Image (cartoon, protein in one colour):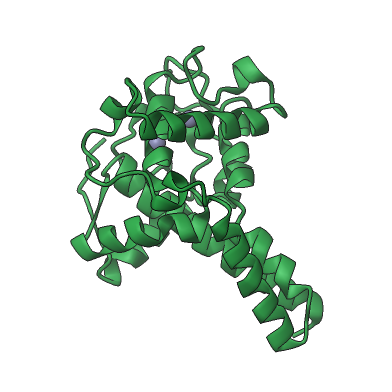
Length: 247
Ligand SMILES: [Zn+2]
Ligand SMILES: [Zn+2]
């Protein structure tokens, strides 16, 4: 395998681990419960999620449920209609920080939105150690790079595993601005084929906002939800159950 191919393979592998956590465990599992995490899977995700993705599972779920509740209104934590396309990168980061702070201070309505989640904000965030996952993955990246003698594998790994802000920006910004609709929702959600391909089905925002309880984000035969495919794989590995869904 050429050097460039090895870098791409490592990047994609790390990217896949991140998106697997986010779309299967955080989004379809914890936020919408359209898939059910087996008890030990759930404990494992709560324990490892922040380390793997650098994103707190409780804060992610809280912010995401608020996005559904207030989609594209002024109360939406990340709508491109109010913040602009590029500025949304900063807006979603600020919203995440605010959500974390409000959860830790026990503020309403944040607490009420995630009342069903029995676990607290991760200790990394409670102890202002949010940067440790970034360091850990930098060390893992360097170990891979030095161990293989191919140093560029280090940034390939690091950018892949820490890619959530970019994935989120694509979904939040492009998925609420550009694309087609299958349903007349009260928000500006769109189905964006490119984002759906790059972010494992998450680009079908119009479908997803119409039926957030569905484990599958595609509705037309030609729409491909790779995240649902990950769910099917996770089910066959005994990690989750997929709830039956009728549109
Ligand atoms: Zn959305
Ligand atoms: Zn959702």
